[in-house]
Image 1 (cartoon, rainbow, N blue to C red):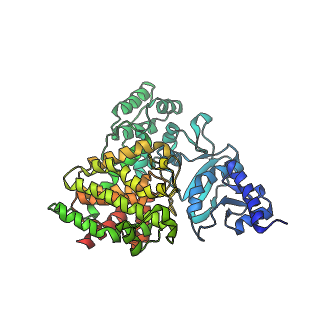
Image 2: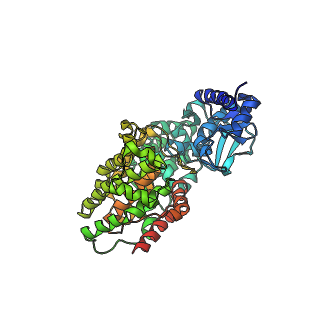
Image 3: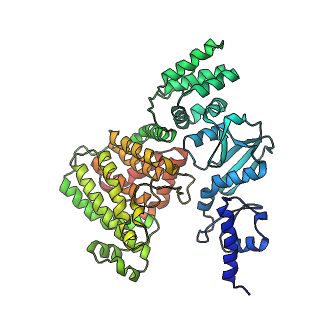
Length: 505
C-alpha cells in the first residue's frame, strides 16, 4: 500500500502534467476527486470559484493574494477559452492598457462575446469578469497577446470610449506615442466613416507632438469628403512631445511627468547648504546597523544585531555558514553589508557634485552583484544570475501590480536612468527614483533593497540625510507603493518618505 507521501507525489505529478500543458485554470474535471481533494488539503491547489482552481504554494498563508494575482491573466485566458472558444475579446480600453505594457490586475475585466451573460463573475480578492453580450470586432482587428484576445491598437483607439482620453491620459498618450505609422488608423477611420473620432484622434496626436500624423488624418478625411472638427480630448493637460520609443517606455516617461508636480507639493525642499562630505559619510556609516536590520526585515529576513556585527567584523565564512541558524538570512546579511559599502562609494561621488542619476546608472549593477555575491559563493545561485536584468516574469507579493515584461527591460531600465539623470529636482529624484525602480522591478530578487539604496543615493544628491524605512512602518510603506503602482497616485508615497526625512532633521 502506498504511503501518504507517495500518494501526494502521484497527485503532484498529475498537477505538473497539467501545468506542463500550460493550463492555469484547472477545472474540476481535470482531476479525479481524490487527487483534487488531496492537493487542496495539502495547499497545492486553491479554489477560485466553484469547479475552478489554480495551482498554489502550501507555504502561503490563508488569505494570501499572491498566487491569485500571479495567475490572474493566464487563468483569465484559460477560463475564457474554455467558456467561449475563440469568440471573445477584451474591451478596447483594456486592450489599450495591455498594448502599453500595463498588466496590473484590474478590479473588473470587461469581455466582449456574443455568448455573454451580461453579469459579473465574482473572483477572489474583489476582482471579477463581466462578459458583456456584444459583437466581436472584425477578425482583422483582433490579435492574441500572451494568450489574451485583444483589439489591435488602431482598432482599439477608434473603438474606445470618448472619455477614456481624459480618464486615462497616461495610458492613452503612451498608446498614441507607440502607434508608429498612422496609416492603419487612417484606413479604419475612412472605412468606417468615423469623422468625429478622426477629429478627436487628430487632436490627441497633436497634443503629444505628432503634428504630421494629425495633419495627415485631417487632410485625408477631408479629401475623402468628410467634415472633420479637431478636438483635443486631453482638455487642460499641457501638450507634450514624445520621442521614438516603445509604448511601455513612453508610459514610463509619461508617468514620471504626471507625478512630478504631486511630489514637489508633498515633499520637503532640500536643505539650502550642501552637507560636508566627511560628516555625511560618517553619518551613513553610523546608520548601517539600523539600516540593515530594517531593510532586510522588510523583505522577510530574520536578522539581529549579533549577526549584523559578525558580518561587519568579517567573522563570516561561506564554508561554515551552515552553523548559522538560518543560512538564507546570514547570506542576505553579508550581501547587504557588501552592497552597503559599494553604495557608500556612489554616495561619495554624488557628494563630489557628480550627477546622481549618472552615478546610479553606472553603479547599480555593482550594488546588485555585491548584494548576491555571498549566495553565489555558497553555491545557492549561479554566477550568471549576477549578469544583467531578469529574463522572465516576476510577481510582487500581495500586489495587483504586474511589472513590465522581461523583453522590455533592456529598454526600460536605461530610459529610467535617463529620466533620473535629467531630473533637476532632488525631491523628485528621491521619490520617483525609488518608486519607478520597484515599479519596473528589473531583477528577480532584491528590488526593494536596491530601491532603498537608490533612494538614499538620491537623498545625498539633495543634501537630505540617509533615511531608513522602519520595519514597523512596512504596511504603510507597501500600501503607498501599491497606490502609486495601481492607481498612479504618488501622493501617499511622497508623504510617507517626507515624514521619514523630517523625522531625521
